[in-house]
Each structure stands twice: as C-alpha cells, then as structure tokens.
Amino acid sequence: MPLLRKIVLFLVLTLLISAWSGVYAAPAPAAPQAKPVIDLPQINSGQSTESAGANQLLELSKVRWANHTEAVTGAAKLRLVMDVSGGPVEASGVVVATPTPRLVVTIKGTTPGKSVENINFDGKIAEKVTFDTSGQDTQVIVDLPVMLEDGDYRVFTLRSDAQANKPFRVVVDINKPAPVFDFSFTPGLKNKVIAIDPGHGGSDPGAIGPSGYQEKTATLAVAQNVKNLLEKAGARVIMTRQDDRDVYGPNATAVDELKARTTVADSRKADVFISIHANSFTDRAVGGTATYYYQKTRYDAMLARALQTGLIEAGKLQDRRANPANFYVIKRTRMPAALVELAFISNPDEEKLLSSPEFQQKMSLGIVRGLERFFDQAAKLN
Image (cartoon, rainbow, N blue to C red; front, side):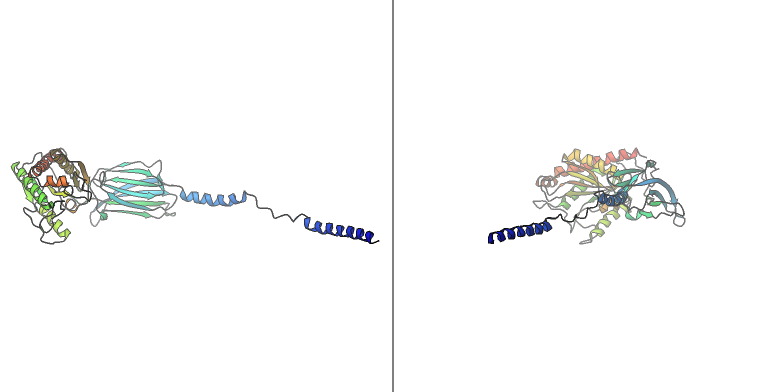
C-alpha cells in the first residue's frame, strides 16, 4: 500500500508541474508592430525639400542701368539695378586697386540668369560691368577709370513690391569722380615740373639698417642726385626737403607731416610727384626694388611701371614690381604720383649699397630714365 500511494502521489505531482510549466511556456503577447520604415523618410522628405529650396541659388533675372544727375547739386552718378527672382538676398561692395581699380559687389546665394550680359560704358564713371559666379555667390565687377573713396559709392537692396509688380532688387550707385586736372603731357623732360620727396627726415630717421645706416640719409642723397640730373635735362624740380629736417615741423603727427609734403607738390602744380624710400623687413634675407601707386588718374600706374623699369635696369636688384597701395602721399596728391622703394635697408648687403655713392647715382639715373619713359608714353594718350 505505501508503494501504491507513492506511485499515485508521484503521478499527481507530475501532472501539476506540467500544468504550471505550461502557463509560463505559453507564447508572449505579440509586441506592437513598428511603423513601416517608409514613414520616417516621408516625414524627412518634406523637410529636406524645404531646406533644399532655401539652398538653391536665386537668379539675377534682369539688369538695368541709367546715368542720373542730381537736380540740386548737379552731381552725376551711375545707377545699376539688378532684379532677384525668388526672394531677398544680402549684398555688399568693396573697392580694390588690383589689377585695376574695381568695385566688387557680392550678391550672396545668386547666379546670373541667361539674359544677364556684361555691360560696356564710356569710362567717365565706369568702364564695364562683368558678372562672375564664384561658389554660391555672384560677383558683380565694375571696372573703374580711377579709385573710389568709401563715400563715392553705395550698395543697397529694395524689397519686392507685389502691387507695383517689382521683384527684390540690388542697387549700386556710383558717383562720378571729382574732376582732376586736365593732364596733357608732351615727350621729354624739358619744362616739366617734378616734385621730389625724400622720405622721412629730421626727427624721423625712417628704417635703420643692421649697421645703423638711416633711411632718411639714403633718400636725401638719391633725391639730390635726381634733382641735379633733371635740371640738366631742362626740368624744374620742387623738393619737399633739401636737408635733414621735418617738412611740417619737429615731432608733428604723421598726417600733418605727410600732408605738408603733398601740399608742396599741389601748391606748385607739379606734373608728377615721386616719393623716395628704402624698404625694411624682419627677415634680413629679403631684398629687391619695388614701386607703388594709387590709381587716382589714368597715369599713376603708368608712372610707377616706368620708374620700376628704370630702377631695375639701373640697380639690378630683385624686381618686386609696381604695385597698387594706399599710401597717403601718392593718394592725396592731385597729380600722377609714385613711391619708390630703392632697396631693403634691413638687408645687410643692400644697406651697403644704399650707403654707396655709386649705387645712389645708379638709382638716381634709373629714376630719371623712368621719368623720361613715362612722359614719352603719356604723350601718346593725348
């Protein structure tokens, strides 16, 4: 009996365990199904399309221009209007001197339409307008006859006007440059009035070479040689200084001193102005000859290039070319002007040359020959 009871008890326990296990082994409720994968891209697709539209380049659809004269002041200006299809954009302008005087207007996020073409002008205010796409922006390049001051141009935008059927517009106003002296040059040096400016002087030694030689000494020596050579050729020479002194006065401000030099040339109605200097740099190995100009007349670059050629032929140093610059004395003189950097006084070898009377005479001859070359070239433009 005890055995039979054990067997029955075993069978009952086995059935109970199987039933209990069946409860936990039953399949779990199905997890909620994920949304179709296509749903997410559909949502993003709408956003991407909107973003792509924002990044698409807008079009300069039409360009118009007109010359305008102010009724009150009589000032003349050129107005350039560019329609932008699609919406507002940002525009800005900057005047650059190289390779020639230009107003560069950048219109962000745009490209010129097929109907937009380059424009040629008569050169009184502008010479031509070209449209160039660089990356995501359009550059409107206005070639100018002379350099502009900041107040001589304006770049602004006008909002679209649906009622008047006018799109968003970018407007560029360029004032006609102030009249300059009517230069009419003849060949040769005879009877020319030439202003020579020996750089620095007096309380301002200029750059100082490794052995202590001063720029103001070299510039005065070369200027005096140039004066003598020009006078022998029949020119009249005006010197801003003829000895070691400040032109305005001791310890003057930089602007007062520089203005005094330009005033000497302007008041005497010089044909050209030449400022003589020596260069300097932290690296003593750097050397060479350079000439600088500010294109305020159509002759400034021509003068600088002619002088640079003469100096390189005479001195045989590294040719650092004629370059545009914003130096006060060449910008503020009324006549064509150039600033020459004979050599690098910071270079020990060139410092020795600058202090040598033989080299000084060579560079003086180079300046005079450059001037003669300039007047011959300028006479052909009359």
